[in-house]
Length: 129
Image 1 (cartoon, rainbow, N blue to C red):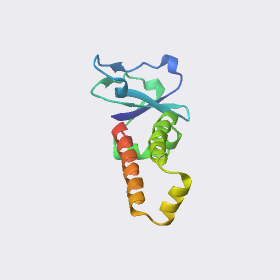
Image 2: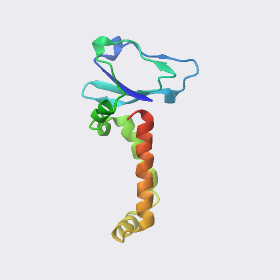
Image 3: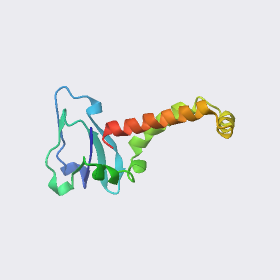
Image 4: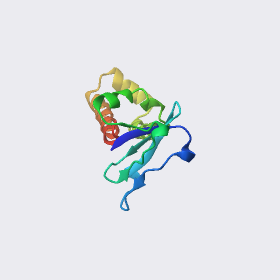
């Protein structure tokens, strides 16, 4: 998957072409920030159209992907998914239990937190971040 963005009015933007066997997971909106619309797409199933007047940009190199780090917290649809992942973990514990486990440096709790953090990182990587 690759992250891309474009700016300006959506009505004049030329939409990508999707393969007949593409799925919703092959192209989806991550959110908007500072006048730009961010998407993740599968280049094997989706072809971007040329949109030079819309400042369309793909983020492929490590440097380009690094520039996205400050945008990630502002992409509402992406944050909703990450929030679901975190809440699924947090719902296993009541607040007091979490505080007690953290205060006692519970190894299993630390391992569970690190595993969830790895899962979120892998998800972001799978999207092209």
